[in-house]
Image (cartoon, helix red, strand yellow):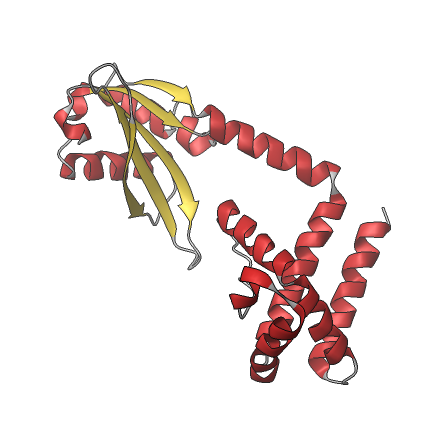
Length: 225
């Protein structure tokens, strides 16, 4: 356990779960023999994201976990101003109390945010695909009748191990790994999705009309630029 090592560094990041609860993720790096492993500690719900309150929450939680903050030698956060701010960020407030806790930016988080921005701005087609996927998932799950019929279409159109899946996985707003799994499932069930939408298109309903309007709107917004 990290609290058995004398010196350590803390790693913290803000995140929001599917219930829209803001929370602080706390991890540590510590010395163990000749290695410097990383270990996740906990999620802490937060109700204020100011540098002052996040620093206070971090110190309180780490102390409760048995870590001696006098032995903290590093702190790593992303580039958000409330975390990395020179005067009022978490790193500045922590360093004021523990001068040996040197701050460094989490390079992986910064690179991820940079690449996400580059991909979003350079590939509007990709964003259009995400929107199409979300609307199709919502459409297929909003009706008990559509949900009950979908497994029959899977059995008819899909073979192999994918045929054991009976429904699509909802689009996750906060976890990229979950989005990846959702797309894999969507692609494996794509023949059944096509058949399902084709059958639904023969019926006139407010949901079908709304889906068509939404898809047309997405296509229009992403082709007129």
